[in-house]
Image (cartoon, rainbow, N blue to C red; front, side, top):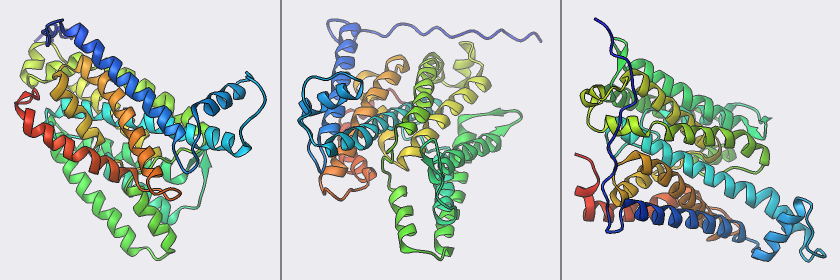
Length: 368
């Protein structure tokens, strides 16, 4: 039988959501999220154990690129704090937040499950197990500013997803149901292996504390080389994810409906999984296991703007970046000079809001 050629499905335009039309409403949302991200970055750079004024920040940044606005009026420590500590960390937080939120949209759309998150198909368990072993056993090392823990987490997350994908393939194909089940199995097994490695390890209390701190999440970007390595991966992954928006819209009507629209299911599922795993692995390598963000941000935005992935993907990236930067700023400022795990804030601050929105607008989320 002659195989029908693959073509990109055409999804009808979104209906207007407000009197002025969807275009005006969408523009307002984009402006609001972009403004929130800029404010979050500015606040993240200013706040900390040592406060920096916007004028000082501007002068230091301009001087770092060879532009001088007058005599130096700040202390040398301020320049070090800004350029070597805060700026890399804030930008790293924005990248991690955008990556996790985008990956959350991809997996929720692929699995047609509003409770799916970037870690649902084994990324967190694989990264956690590999990072735990690296922290307990491997000696310190650095490549492009990344330690052995970050590199192990990235590799472990990707290998776990590859294992899930292979286990989920039945008769040469993988369906959302088998992916979900395989992900649960791999997550459970690797999670217990990670716990077992901690129990069996006989070493310093410092290393064990490091393991638990990493598992609770924290932006560990202290070198611009890390941004140069992770940044292109995240940016390319997010842009490529935008290209899957139409296919995700088609998958929302079910596998049979997507095939009727001309979607090559096996190819699209593989691409979406690869992009989601790449984004999650990159995020985990510099942020540890930051929970809830990739689950809540896409779902909250879906309640606000609808299920169309052509607007949901870019909006989630902006919102995820802004919210994680704000959460990380709070985590390192509230108990300064001590720092709290950012994963605690993403759960405590986002959880109640998420539940309120679910109770109010659960039927408007676009899921059936």
